[in-house]
Image (tube, rainbow, N blue to C red; front, top):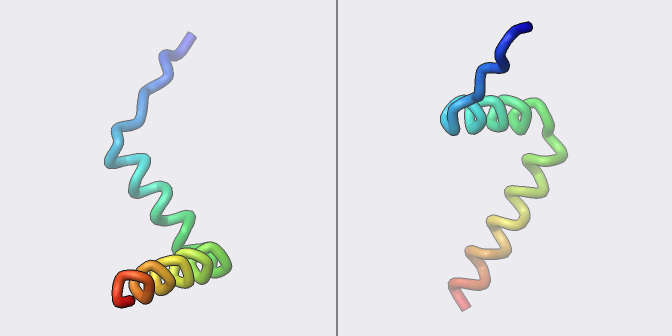
Length: 43
């Protein structure tokens, strides 16, 4: 049997980033939340 190679944190971050870049709807949600936080900080 083959041992499963555990992914490093950096590998997981890169994989997640690639998935998000492919998912425009998720990017839009993240951008909207980020904008809301920035507006809240300005108040």
